[in-house]
Amino acid sequence: MLGLNRISLADFTGNGVVWEPPPLAPTPAPNTVDPSAGAVAAVPGGLFAPGESVRNLTGSRVNIRSTPGYLGKGAEDVLGLLQPGDAMEILGDSADFDNLRWWRIRFAAPGGNLVDGWVAEATASGVQILGR
Image (cartoon, rainbow, N blue to C red; front, side):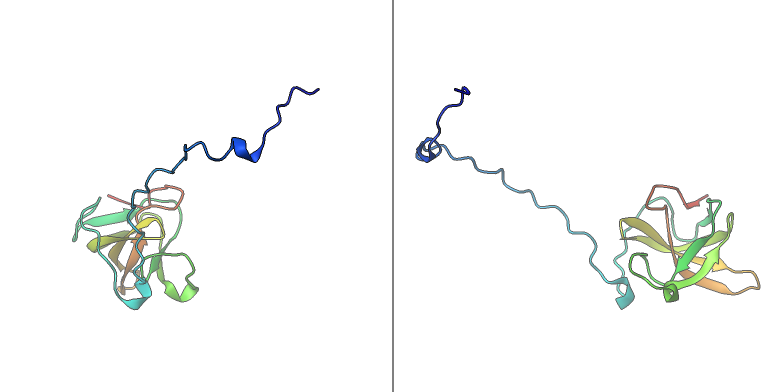
């Protein structure tokens, strides 16, 4: 004998005790607005305010994008590059896409061209991109 008891199906049914999972609490849906469709849901508040000057705090070049978000986008979405330390102006409220906070900015590129686009506040790994 191995010390195992015989168990039948009757042992599992008919005793009136039934486990029920707890009710699910609804969670907010992620932002599903398609930024390429031109409709971007603003998220008021945050680290910066319209008209404020911010800089690229990283030691890397950072993409300025035509729409917020970066997942599944091609090279045509990149309007320009920010060099480390480059300054830009916050144009409006932020928007949340691809689990990142994006800010609409205006960058005065070398040569005097103005580039209006979107830059993430931080990288997906948490490295701060924009700051004072």
